[in-house]
Amino acid sequence: MKRSLFVVMPLAGLLLAATAGTAAAHDTRLHGVGAPNGVDTTSLPLGDGKWSIETPEKGSIYLCSGSAPSTTKSTISAPWINSSGGTFNLVTKRTYAVDGSVSWASQAQFSAPALSGTARAFSTHDLPSSHTTGVFPIASTDNAYRYDANPNSISAQSVSGSLKATPQLRDEPQCVGGGAIAITTTGIVLFNALDADGRDALANEIGDSCDGHPNGGGMYHYHLISACISDEGTGHSNLVGYAMDGFGLYGYRGESGAEVTNDDLDECHGHTHEIEWDGETVSMYHYHATREYPYTIGCFRGTSAVVSGAQSRGVQSGQQGTGWRTGAGGPATASGTPQSGAQQSGGQSGPSGQATPPSGSLPGGQNGQNGQSGPGGQGTPASGGQTGQTGGQQQGAPSGGPAGGQPSGTPPSGAGGQQPGGQTGGPAGGPGGTGPGGGPTGPGAPTGGTRP
Image 1 (cartoon, helix red, strand yellow):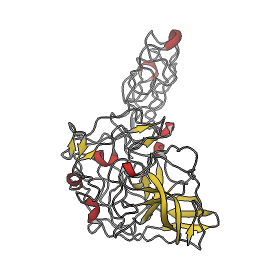
Image 2 (image 1 turned 180 degrees about the vertical axis):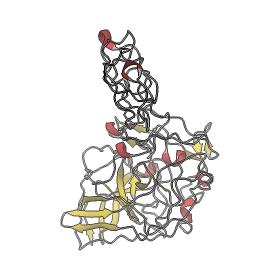
Image 3 (image 1 turned 60 degrees about the vertical axis):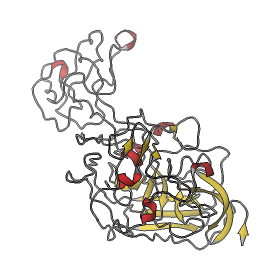
Image 4 (image 1 turned 90 degrees about the vertical axis):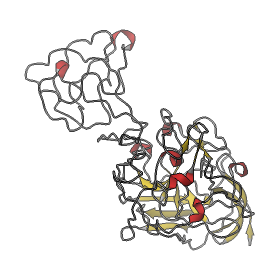
């Protein structure tokens, strides 16, 4: 029976079949070259910097302003990157997949999106039961480590939500955030295609054989449709997940059975035609996966649901989080509360008040140097010696030594403003000697980006 657009007949429920193999035995079709549409996976265009907070566009991601990277970093230098041509070789990159085969079947719990009245509720521990993962943190002996020294471990989450059973198209596309944009049929959350630095995550980051990796909160996630989610067969692809606005996310093949490209889809990476939906043939909007960036959802065409435990970018160690970045030299690490937005390097805040702490005050922390931490400061204060409320306040670091005395003098010209001594010193800063100007502040946050 056929139904009209967006009229979806509720059924008793839908049990998603997450039929996939282990990391060692997955859908190798998804790794191939020369797909039916002619997309060459040995020379895929890089998606670095292809995002906007202003307008949705094909082949781009329409980000909510609060999720936008503060800057776009350079593409990493790696054997699969052709920087001069602006492309990367996915086939070569997959040979650097994170080693290991860790089973989570005993801990995984996934209640697949199922109809209940007008809603489609789900819950997940965000651990795969139908495939294994690589070993995280990435071992220094792993050939991936030189290019992506992910220090994060996978841990069980508590993610739940209630999606619209009959999603409706909005008049205008809606922006996506930096956390989960969909829940897949393996019970694993899907993030958008960007890393924290505004780059193509598939090209610049390394996942395991099933295309997953953990963020700073331990949340295992994909940035594209996992190679361990089955999309075998002919004709239109299977349902591989639900977007957070309730619309279905399907695999690579369209109506004719040929793989779709960005040209076949709208700016949000979807289109409308007849599909199987809850056991019915309906004509409705849906999203598709493609080989090309942005790989899945570029923006929402419906209204996104509020999902509990899905971790916004402010909790991610990648698209914002615990402050580390990859490179041939390995990661720089920092502990402390993750920041919202990209990790900030130490601001040039100038010396602190340069006054003697009051008698009997506690010594400042020993870590760091005056005026090197904090996002504030940066030169001469505005409007006649404004005190620097944030100078020397390192947001990404734990407390160091006890706070020293409050500076009693006015900062000299060009200073970053008065700084409470030693309030947020460097990592694990112990108590030390009396710091000048009420005690030194901690070191700046590590340079480099953060990880999703």
